[in-house]
Length: 414
Image (cartoon, rainbow, N blue to C red; front, side):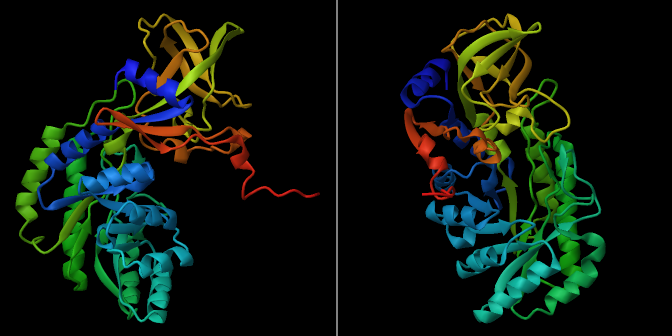
C-alpha cells in the first residue's frame, strides 16, 4: 500500500483506522510455506488477529488454525475451517470451552495440565465419546532465540518435563482420552534462524523419545513456531533461505520416523505484522517544557503494543506521516487519553505536521486492537479495513459511542 491509497482509505472510512494489505498477507504465507517441507502444515495463530475476514483469507490459502478460546473457535468455524483442521491451545480453558470444543470434534485439544485432562475425560464420559488430545510440554531446553521465553523456564504453559512420567501415567488411565501427540512452543519473536532450527530439532527428538518411552503413536507433532519480524532499529530480518535449507536437512533426517505423523508449525506475527498499519489523524501540535507533542485521535487504547504497555523497555514502532518526507524534528506522538502512558511514539523524528495530517504506525497487523484496552475512556472502536486485489473491504465497522452502553451498563435509577 502506498501513501496515496492509504490516504484515500482514511478519507472513506475515517480515523483512527486499522488497514491491512491482503496481498502482503498472502505473500508472507507463501514465503513461510516455501521454507517448509511439503509435509509440514501451517496453523494460523488466530490470537494475532481474530478478524473473521482475515481468518477466511487464511482458509482460502489452505492454512489450518490454532485457537485459544471458545470465541476464537466459534469464529474459526464461521470462517469455514473444518474441525479436523482446528487445534485449541490455552493454559486456562474453562469447562464450557472444553465442552464446546469436544462437541465440535476438533482435531486436538492441547492439554496443559492433569486437571484439564480430567475435566475433558469427565465431559467425554458424559457424552460417551473418546477425545483426541495432545500434551503440551514445557521441556528442559530453553527458548531458542526468542524475545519472550515460553519453555525451559517456570511458566503457566504446559506440563513440566520433570513431572511428565507421573502425569502421563495418570492421563493414560483416563479411559475417554486418546493421546495423539505433543505440542511445544518455545517462545515468540525469534529472528535467529540457526536457533530456531535448533529448537525445532529438539522438539522432534522429544516427540519421538516420548512416543517410544510411553508407547503411544505419534500422530501429531506441533513444533510451535515463534517466527519473528524486525520491528526496531538494530533488529535483523529472519534469514528465510537459511531457515529453508536447515529445515530441509532436518526433515531428511527425521521424515522416515515421522512418515505417519501430522507435523505442524504455528504462526501469527510473521504472517500479519508487516501487513497492517494503524493510522491516526493529527488533532493538535503543542510544546510543553521544551518537548513537542503531536496529539492524535487514536492512541494506546487501540494500539497498546505501540505504547509498549506492559513492557519494561521502551521502543518505537516505525511510523511516518502520509505524503510527507524529510524527518526534521523530534516529537512525542500521543493519543487522546487522560494518562501520561498514552505515548505511541517517544522521541521520534518526523516531518513538521499540521492538524489533519495522517500518521501511520507500521507493522501493526498483529496484536493490535484486540490486545488493547479499547474500553478505556469509551472512545468508539476504529474501523478495520483490508485492501486486497486493488479493492478495499470493511472487516469491522467503526464503532458508535452508544455501543459502550449496550449490554454492559445498567441504570441504577429509572
